[in-house]
Each structure stands twice: as structure tokens, then as C-alpha cells.
Amino acid sequence: TPGIRPLVAGNWKMNGVSSSLDELSRIGQGFMHGLDAQTDALICVPATLLSRACERIKDTPVKVGGQDCHASETGAHTGDISAEMLRDAGAKFVIVGHSERRSDHGETNANVKAKTEAAWRAGLQAVLCIGETHEQRVNGEALRVLSEQLTGSVPSSSTAQGLIIAYEPVWAIGTGLTPTVRDVEQAHAHIRQELTRLVGEEAAKIRILYGGSVKPSNARDLLGVANVDGALVGGASLKAADFLAVAEAY
Ligand code: PEP
Picture 1 (cartoon, protein in one colour):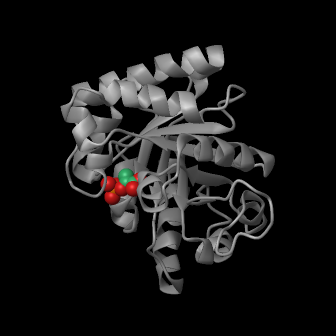
Picture 2: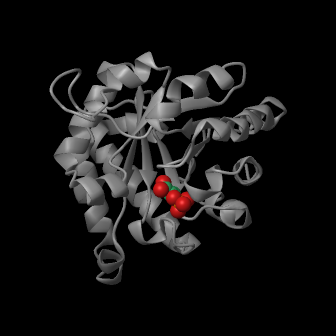
């Protein structure tokens, strides 16, 4: 989108131990040698690796983020992590509303909205994920579902600085399946239109990423679509060579 700098973001999910930091170093190095001219980069690591990940790539253009946060700042929520804790560990971003959180933990649009606001409270940028299931796509409900998720989870005070949207069709995540370029184009145009309804002209500056089985071989097609301002990459972000090849599509 004119005037928007793309972002290629990785989501390591529940993968990564100390030895994985070497892969992260390779990603950081890759962006230091040219790629940073084309795109911003982010890797969302497991919370256990956050502070070490930040230390590892602090001299590179690659940012580090968390994968989820609790809506509250502190309190009796065993096992949860607040946005303030992520920030304290060095994160600059946090993913909210990933479909695996919605399905594994029953997160609702209202929860996702609260987490988005928690991210801002802590000074983090939120990467807010939306997307239809296979059944919804087959029933012709995809765009309606996207509208419902956006209406329920995007705060009206959203700015391009605080909010990034990731369109991730649930059926495309980790499956090797991807929507057609036409379907991606239609979904992203719809998201841009809905964002304009919800937040006004700021919507023109908000990044809308595509996610779901992005890999080096399809990145150029998917990232070339109108209103696709970058990618959220799961599996292919675990290997530096793949992640860098995806970023090279820009
Ligand atoms: C994701 O979970 O955000 C994702 C896009 O995963 P994958 O690239 O593995 O489909």
C-alpha cells in the first residue's frame, strides 16, 4: 500500500529453546545486510526466550515480540503474562487474537480488544489476528466473519502506530493451503474498508499482513497483492533461510 512500510513478522509459536537463538542471530544478520531497506522485521518468540532474544539481536534491525498477553497489568492469573511483563523483557510487539489462542483458550473478540488495549497501555504494538474457518469460507461467510471480528476487537482509538492487522484464514495456518490471490485481494480490501468504518482515515496507514502457509515459494505472489502490507509467518520463520527468503519477496 502506498506510504506503508511492509512488515515481515515471524511467529515461533511453542517452538524454541536456547539453541534456537542461533537461528535468530542468522535472521538478525540477514536483515543487517540489505533486507532492512525493503521491510521491517519482527520475530515473536516464546516468553521464555524474550529477554535473551532481545539481547541476541539488539544490534540488528529485527524487533522481538511476544505471542499473547493478559489484559490485566498484574494479579492472580497463574501462568499468564501481562503486556507490561513482555515490555519489561524487551518486547516491542505482541500478537493478540491468534486463531490458536481463540481455539485453544476460547478467546473472544472482547478479550482480544482488551488485550489490544493492554498492549498499548504497556507501550507495545499489537498484531491483531483475524480469519475465517474453512466452514465459514465454504458457506460464503468469510467477509461477514472478518467484519464481526474487526467490529468486536478493534478499539475505535486505533492508530497505525499501535495496531497491525493480520488476516490469517484458519484453514491456511500450518496446512500448506493458501487462498487464491483473488481471495486475498478481496479479503484485504474488505478489511481496509471495515477499518475505515471503524477508525476513520487512519485506516489508510494501518498495516494489514497476510498469514497462513507463507513460504519462500509463494511469498512473491501473496505479498504482491493490493493491501497486503507484509506477512505473518509461522512454520517458515523457524529457519532463518526460509524467513529471509520470504522477506526477500519485497
Ligand atoms: C501463524 O500461525 O501465524 C501462521 C501463519 O502459521 P504458518 O505460517 O505455519 O501457516
